[in-house]
Structure formats: structure tokens, C-alpha cells
Image (cartoon, rainbow, N blue to C red; front, side, top):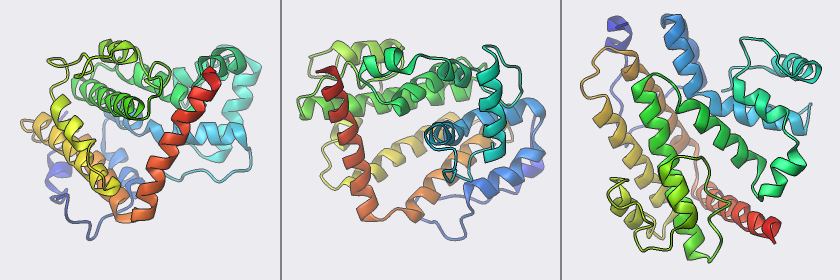
Length: 276
């Protein structure tokens, strides 16, 4: 389905300009009703990361404040968790299948024993589910980000002499290689086109600049993969992703950029302790 009026009405976005930028939650609320039911599900899948985090937050603290960017509200989670408590195979259109899988895991044996955080375990489930979508653009987008994030983790683990086997998530070819490789090119030269560029970016000492360069890489990927999608849902999804990037940079301070890195490093160190 084409969205001539919707796409024509979207403003041009540039990575160096955040003026007049709307909150992604507001953008989604405006765009979603204009999409077909099937395309709304693609948008929901793309934005499910917010609900993933809200789900984990809710399980940890039923009274915690949830991110408004998530589609599901606090009341939704109260109802859905109760439903998952009562049955192994709940049926509710609000539930994504991997949430049910996560909820019914024996977390002590199947998550803690693996030496990874619950956030990483959830992310692995999310990527595995999202990469099964029939939409080629989204499938490639999720796989690109999985590979990019896993490579960055592998580089960080090598730098700090940590075991990457528990930190890398997902189960695709590149994830499997990164868990065991000791080669200079991480064993993925010729498989991951952006390898050399990512390795150069990882050497950037200014953490905020490094994150901006990584987002520029993602931005360029979106440009290349929607170049011939003029009025399709892929163009709409790419616009949402770009808005999300710009909004994050609009709010991010240098101190928060530093904290992002520290949180990641502490998470990896915690994984090593759990393995020991």
C-alpha cells in the first residue's frame, strides 16, 4: 500500500538539525491511524523495544513509571501479566509471542545461569522474533543492528579482555562467529560490509562523537535501503527511525553519553562475574 499524502507531508530530516522535532511518541500517535492494519503491526514491531523495557520495569516494580513511548499502558501490563500468570498459552492481540516465552522461563536456571542480563536476554528474543518478519526492509534493519551491536560488544570485550561468548546476543551466523573468534577481523570480513568502518569508529575516544558516527552509519543505511521506496510504508518506518535518532541526540548531554558507555561496560563486567 502506498501513502502518497502521508509521505508527501513528512518534513525533510537532517542529522545536524533538531529544530521543531516532535517527540517520537507523538509522531507515532499521528502516523499509526493512517496506516493499514498490517502496516500498523510493522510499526508496532519496530517500536516494541520501548514495550520490552516497560515489561521488564513492570516485572521488577509494579508501581514504577513506564516510558510513555511504549504502546502498552500500566493497566495493559497489569492485565497481561495476570493473563500470563493464569495460562501458559494466553491469547491476547496486545501480547507479542516472545513476551510469553520470557515470562514462563525459569529465570534462575535459564537466564542467570547463562551469565547475561535480563535486558540482553529480552533483546535476543526480540531480535530473533523481529528477524522472522516477512517485510524485507524490517528484517534487514533488525539484522543490521544486531550485527552492528554485537560487533561493538565483541570489540569492547577484546579491549577489556572479557569473554564475548556470553555478551553477544542472538543466534545468526555473525553472532555465532563473534562468540568464538580470535582473528583480527573478528572472522566476519566479507560477511559484514561495514566491518572496517565500525572498527575505525570504535577507536574514537570521544564517546559522544563515537555514538554520533554510529548513528550516521545507521542513517546512511536507512537512506540506501529506502532510496527507491517513494511512498511505501518503508519510507514511513525510516522516517520514524530517523526522528527517534534525532530526538535522542536532542536530549543527550555529554555526561549522559559517558554514562551510556559506563552502563554497557558494567553490564559486561557483571556478566563475567556471573560466569565465574
